[in-house]
Image 1 (cartoon, rainbow, N blue to C red):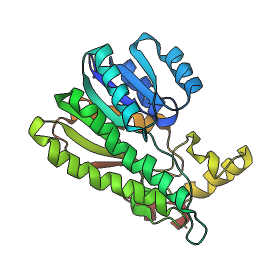
Image 2 (cartoon, one colour; image 1 turned 60 degrees about the vertical axis):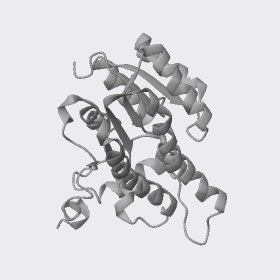
Image 3 (cartoon, rainbow, N blue to C red; image 1 turned 180 degrees about the horizontal axis):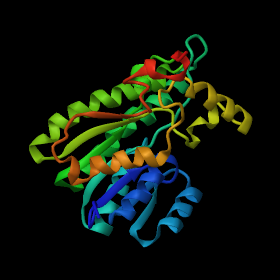
Image 4 (cartoon, one colour; image 1 turned 45 degrees about the vertical axis):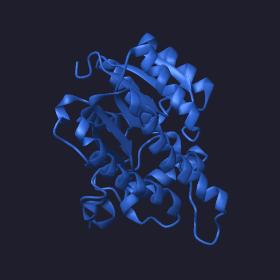
Length: 257
């Protein structure tokens, strides 16, 4: 087991990529604390994952709540070896049509919340721990209408490098996993019906070299690698899990004859 006796803290671990990662971590021998805002989905995750999981209701924008969650994790399990700062929201913010509050909320959750989640865990982290930040291909794609989201994820990729530099003296590794289009609940705001979701997936998949949405489990597998000792010499880097969209865009179906 790749995470035997390790302790992990996953923000937004009650749904989507966070929950898929919690499943992988537990299967690989870790004890896991998950945080989220929704008590119902937290309880459902805890029932599914069993005694190895501690479900804590905490909003990453609430610094005191995150500090309590990190302290509770360390109290229950003795320490923290892994942090997956995953919690985030989507949402479009087209120029000329966006309110200040909407723009700032995305930045507050996706960027500021990530920093303070890591800071909350820091006093409880072992030397040699692994921190993984959840980024996005939007940090490099330039997709119209996604300014706030792209800015937040661009900030995450830059911040990851800074944190890696700051924490290297303790042997703490900081890396970023950046998913492309992934089959999770984050699409509900832009495609609220099954028909809209199917049309959206078909359209976006034409721009992905592998021709499909990714799965949350595929991102979780990458997070697992970065959390494990198998990536012990990987520091300050970013791994895209996007079917080739960022690395080989002209391989996408839309460009084929």
